[in-house]
Length: 212
Image 1 (cartoon, helix red, strand yellow):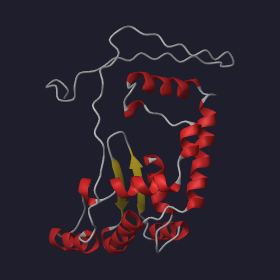
Image 2 (tube, rainbow, N blue to C red; image 1 turned 90 degrees about the vertical axis):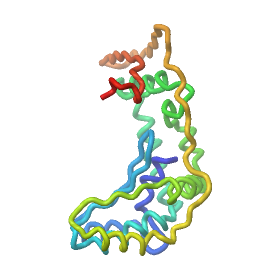
Image 3 (cartoon, rainbow, N blue to C red; image 1 turned 30 degrees about the vertical axis):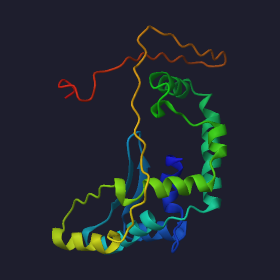
C-alpha cells in the first residue's frame, strides 16, 4: 500500500490532474517525488531558489490534497502485478525475495507483495494509509538551500500551519531473533541458465558501539 501511495501522490489533487502536476514541475526545471523504505516515507521537492514559492505551492498541494484517482490506481496496480509475474524468470530476483522472507520471517520487513495482495488493494486502503500516515503528527520537515531562514519559515507556516493532526500513525514492530541454526533453502528452477547463491546472518545491533 505504501509504495502505491508514494507512486500515486503525483497523479492528481483536488486542483490538478497528473498532467498538470508534471507540466508545472517540468516548467520549473525541478523535481517532485515520493519514496518509501522499510522505516520511512519521504516526499521531496527540488527547485531553483528563485522558484521556491511556486515549488512550495505545488509541494503542499500534492502532500495535502492528493485524491488518488481510481483510474491511476488501477493502472499502477496492473503494472505492479505485471512486474511480479516476471520475477519468477529472474534467479536474482527470486533469490532476493526468498532471502528477505527468510531474514525477517514474521516481521513486516519480510513482507513481499504478491499478486493476491496487490489485487486486493482498494482505493479506500490507499486513502486510509494516506490519512493515517501522511500528516503532521509523525512528520519532520527539512529545508536546505540559499534562503533567509525567517522568510522560508513563514512560507512554510503559511502552507502547513493549519494542517490538522490525525490520530493513528505508524505501528512500531520489534524484530524477532534471526535464525540461530544453519538453514538451507533450495529453489529448483530447471529452466534457468543461471544459479544464485546467497548467505546471510544477523549483524550487530544498531545501538552497539561498534556499529560505526
